[in-house]
Amino acid sequence: MFWRKQKAAIAGFHPLHQALILERGFAATHPAAEWAALAASLHRHTGLIRRSKWALPPRTMDVILPLLTEICEDLGPKGVLAVTADLRGIHVPAKSHPARSIPVRPPARSATETWSIDPWLRLHAGLRDGSGLDVLIVDRQRLRRVTKRGSSGKTKVKRKTQITQLIKVRRRLPRGVAGVRPQTAPPAWIGVTLRDGERRSVLAAAKLLRLPQSGDEQLDRILTVATETFRWTR
Image 1 (cartoon, one colour):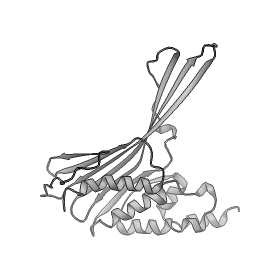
Image 2 (cartoon, one colour):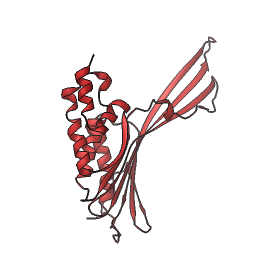
Image 3 (spheres, helix red, strand yellow):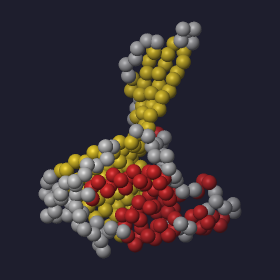
Image 4 (cartoon, one colour):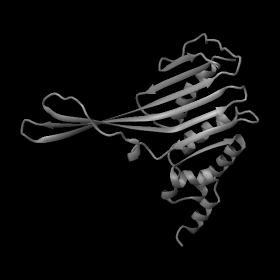
C-alpha cells in the first residue's frame, strides 16, 4: 500500500494533530499538559510526513503553536485553554457572503461586492492570576467586480481585492481588581476600551490594513495587542 509508513505515523499522532492534517482545524478545551502533548506531536511531523497532501496548514507551527505555549505558561494549576482553529483558508465557500450590487458611474455598467469572513482563531483561557483572556483573529476579504464598456464597445471586467485583519483581545480582570490606567498611551494602531460590570474588563482591538507577511510578524501583532490588556495591572 502506498504511503503506508506515513499513514501509520499519522495514526500515532495526537488526535488534534490528526485533525489539523485531515480537517485543517479543531476545537478543544484542555489543561496545559494536554496542549504540551499536542506540541510534542507537532514537532514530530516534519521528520515523518513528506506527502504534501498531509502537510500541516499554514500558521500552525509559526503562529498557533508558539501562541498556545505562551498562554499555557500563565495557566493556573486548574486552568484550561479553549481553542477553536479553522485553517482551511478564507476561500472556503461557506465563509463568503452573497454578492451584492453597489452603485456605479459611467463608464461602469454594473458592480458587485462580495465579503468573505474568516475567524480562523479563537482562544479562551483562565489565567493563574484569576483573570480571563479571550483572543479572536479574523481575516476579512472584500472583492469588487466592476463591468465597464470601453470606447471601442468592448466589455471589460475589473476585479479588486482587499484583505484586512481584525485582532481583538479581552481580559477580564481578577475579582476585586479595578485596574489602573497605564501612564503611557497604547500604539496608535491599537484601540483600548475599559468596560465596567461585575468584573471589569479591558478590550484591545486592532485593524491591520494588510495581512502580516510572516509568522513572526503575525505572532508579534497578536502579542502586542494582548500586552495592552495586561498593562492595567501589575
